[in-house]
Image (cartoon, rainbow, N blue to C red):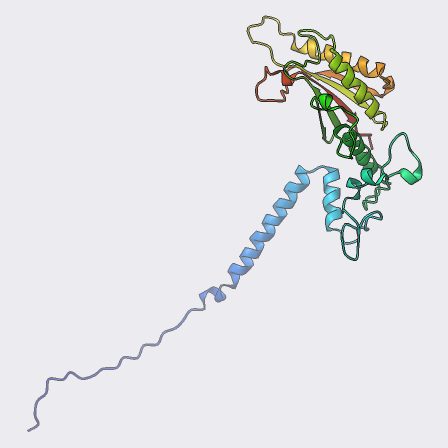
Length: 280
């Protein structure tokens, strides 16, 4: 008779595990991500085409085109290409090679080699406006404006052209209070603007702005006064030597476009002389 035991028998259970392929290993996720990226790029392209001008689109195309010629005046590099700036027109006023109305010789003209088939007219015009701006601000080394008058002048280049803003400050108005009689300050400023604008032949627009008046006034003169002041500035420019046929537009914008946060500040009393871009 064998001895009894309480040891349970060992049972080994073998289970077959089938591993799924995970939907083809996840490759569909990579393809889907590529599709979403392509769609995002497509919609960005559509947005850019709708939100940019023809000139901006041409610039974008030139940037990505591998055949854009190197600027013949400056290559933009300091190595094999040489040059001082990719946009060499920034340097031409200092180099004396910019084109101006008073010196229209071919040797002095900007060549404007931009890779765009426009015969360099756009680049030359941009450079001419830059020369006028530098003559007023003194960035080219010597200003045509005294320091006392310079604090009344601000310039900026826009799509419309070069805006020369003549503005009043506390204690130094452009016109007599409440009227369109110019002060000696405005007469001096228009003399300078007329002389500097003679460097180019662009058309000119004059815009008048004035500060806001209290709302308690029954009859606000902002529209009539801004227009009258703009027209008086036009007469001063013509008297200073500006050709009358260059004047394209005289406008009064009242107090609708204040230059500073406070609409009643004297800084908003200003005249804008715009050297218009030439039509293509």
